[in-house]
Image (cartoon, rainbow, N blue to C red):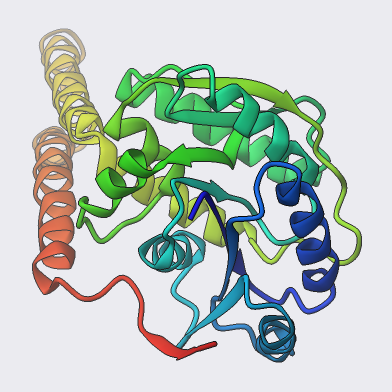
Length: 304
């Protein structure tokens, strides 16, 4: 198998037929030896029925239906596990990623790159989605020391050794693009056109994006723990300064409220130390708890 295309799908009944037609047309210009893997991530519309119909009509298309919504990146993992291609394309199902760009990805990969990722020149997303993406990538870079273009997404082509390396990573929180960066290998970016959604709004709501961002940062760096310690020490240091000011006040002006000084000092000091300790223990315990359960990333209900 030359090329596999992995597409996580959620509430995508209106775009799948056009997506598959354009994928077939584009990839056929590279090779006739390809497969398209559509992963239904617990959709409640007719996405699975559409996938089943397309897969019955075309033997190069296979469908995977997950038992519930496990999240986009877990759905990508399900597709990667089933893929057989020497090269694997990962893309969204909403037609904002243009199938026609795959030819450019493949041609660039033949120059000796294991990973070729698209950089969206003019991102056609909502204002809130663009802003939240910029904030996340800025924070992620500062906290992890990573360097990458904020316009980068999952859309790209990846060699088989990269995919196998990603599948060896068994951590519960999955963020495909960040895992692909972590495993390394030669990579490059090319500019791609990013289309507006043909209909409807994104199913990736702000709360989901915020949760993904927090989990991604926590999974790839422990600097948040360092920041919580520093914040605790800062508060404790502020308490010490307050002690000095209150002593000066006592010596020169007297005490106006009995017991107020000792109460405020103890509250500030213990709050600072507690914040540092809880931040340090809480995040680690939470991550250890999730990892030790060792639950599967996804459960497959049906395949076609």
